[in-house]
Image (cartoon, rainbow, N blue to C red; front, side):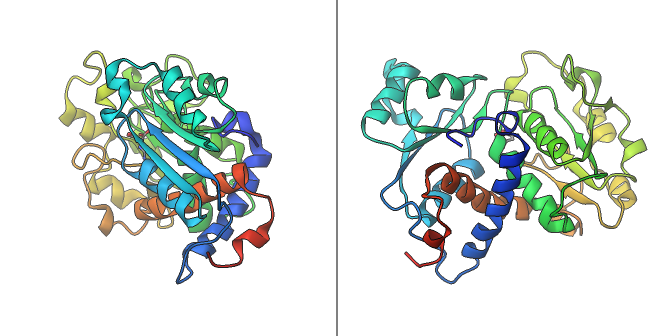
Length: 311
Ligand code: NCD
């Protein structure tokens, strides 16, 4: 694997390999000194043109735990503000000798464009409405761990609820869950669904909530909306939010997931700390391990010996 730009591009074999590799990384992260020499001498650059908390910090942590050097590019303080183009910015970073660039950008397709300008491996940290493959992998890993489903997700019922239309997370998690064999249903008002999709859709959350194994909630991406697609937020929350009444109808083993950032009171009206099936914190924890697996797969020697000794 040279790049990780979307789940569709890497396919089922690589998804399975990365999830298995994540098991090793989880084990490393439980050690008293969670650091191995696997990527010593390698440099990873985080290039984030859009805001991020979880994704950027977990890529940084992941790279450091594998002993890579990390450059974090603060767009707000860079020459991008002096009019430097994306291409010149990427070529400048590449000229310093980086092995991987993790990029987040508001435009869909940027990770593919950037791959043509550098020999570095490109990791998509989220491109516009399009894809967020490491989020999808960490979500798949979290389900596999929480439900003990190492053999795949055949028959697993997943509902993805909220602003599907503007969500790169919705697209990538749907892909990864389907690749692993799950049945995914998208739940949203018609205005927040993509114009065309092969995935089953509904606007009736109540019909599904008692049947799903995974309830995946999404935030309203208001920064990506050019018009008011939801006339009344209170009505939206009442129809599409996880209310106490809906939480009470979840199956006992059902998982509640959210990629963050959460808008409490909108898509979630219960305290996730009080929901036995909520794995939102585990998603964040697993984000580090999954990103370690991705960086090791892209930049490592392939030898698991690099993960045994302590750095
Ligand atoms: C998401 C993103 O930026 O795509 N957050 C994340 O990476 N965990 C989802 C969002 O912004 O709603």
